[in-house]
Image 1 (cartoon, rainbow, N blue to C red):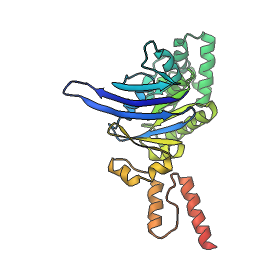
Image 2: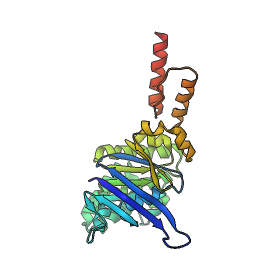
Image 3: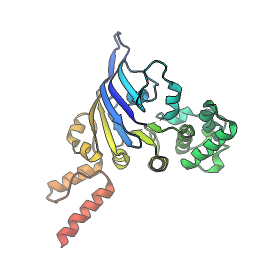
Image 4: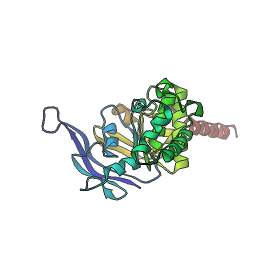
Length: 285
């Protein structure tokens, strides 16, 4: 169930004074089961890119293959694609509209033509997966906290049993605990559901911690496409395009400059702590 993008371009308002080349010759492959992070400054093309993944936007030119089928081919079943590739928008609570949580999560499966019994079964499974307590199932989604609303919105997509979960800044506007809770839940879903996860985020720490691979977008093009350690090794180049590396990257480089023989290619607090302890233990020996 891989996604393959070949020489994809997208132009907003083509042929007008407002023409903008938002995506430029994008070539990518995302194998099934991978956790991919997408980063880039505002206007870099990352949100435009992910809206192509389930056909919400159609490329100006190029091809996009899902499971080796070109989604732009005549007669392609776009509804089935959207069942397979679930997209959770930034501020996903704007996707909520039913009278209670259970009805909202049942909405997607209902549109898939499933029976009421099957819809409720899937909704219950999805709500348990995202960690929302049962006492909220009959509550209005609009009475929930920001983090709880995110869980409901994600559950609504999961109830459709997609093979790919695409999340555009799912922690925007949440407090640190709410952000950590949502991201831990997404990591759990990735592990337990054999699901491809594509996460757009402005947080370098979050991307470094969870992603197997990072795609860096800049001015509509792919700037880097590599493992986190390799991408953040280019922290100076990232700074030049308005991005940054995780804070631990800067700390490790500062220690190196002070004469501590630490490895600088760490991306998480846990890795940094382990590396510092290694150096200190070696020095004490």
